Length: 380
Image (cartoon, rainbow, N blue to C red; front, side, top):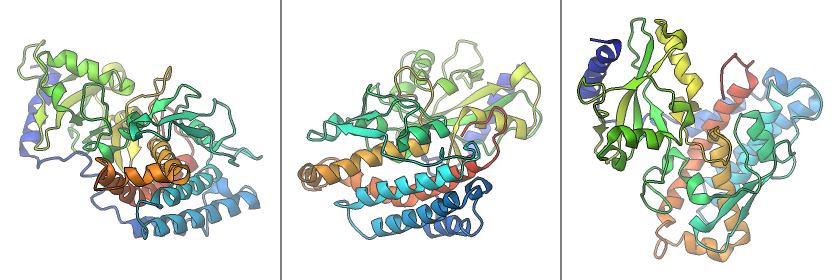
């Protein structure tokens, strides 16, 4: 029995004994919005060290958070007609606090943000017709500056359809703008809390969120590899649990009640040495993006850039697009949120409610990331 088979047997027993895992279920189970804002407010009397370099930077950090909180709390009291405006501009102000708190931005005015740095086109059509452009690398716009800070791509005039960006939000897994097909890619999260306790060269985890068409493919290996082409960080896997011990056997997917599924996959530590749980968890963290305490593979969508969007920037793009529709195309926005005529209305309502709850947690998490001294090999 090789080391992959040994881990594979244990992985099957974990899956068989585990409760049904709904995609993203663990991410927000205990997400208390008031508690998150309390944590953010608690940083204001003693901001992260980078934010106190100069008085103006400190003042920006504390008051931008105050503005963000007021806008998000106001958004919780209104409906979808105006919610996008409040949540987007609340996020925009939070972005100013994030740059003020960044340890990678030294003395000077590099922490200051100006203009949007992002634009939306084709607002008069359907939601899937909307396309998003960004400023060029090195630009001064908020979206560009934050993206560079968070190791997240920008794509200039090479516009990306809103439906592709919409699918980057884990909350939208079951609510596509264009329907289900083989081109759709949504985040994959990994269940890292039950790593094999003994020292081992492989970090073995269930990878959750594979669509049914991947699991039902005649050639499961090829379908898996084709699907993972959109996830460059995941492509260097060592192996996966197979339906039997034959080296060419198909992936042993486990299907959830909602039709999506998971696969236990293995990533090898550098040099193949037997590592501790902490070392294997660190390897997984270096490959994934943090999303409110979870580790997730986000698909790469920017042309000519293999990096995935940072989760905060994925939310930024979608909320920006919705806010532009609400602000500049009120008639079209009214039709999009009309539950009597629009197939997307309920999904929009749900996403905006999610934004009020989820985005503050991402802001808190991101401030923690950028204010800490970076570790070698770590990613935001």
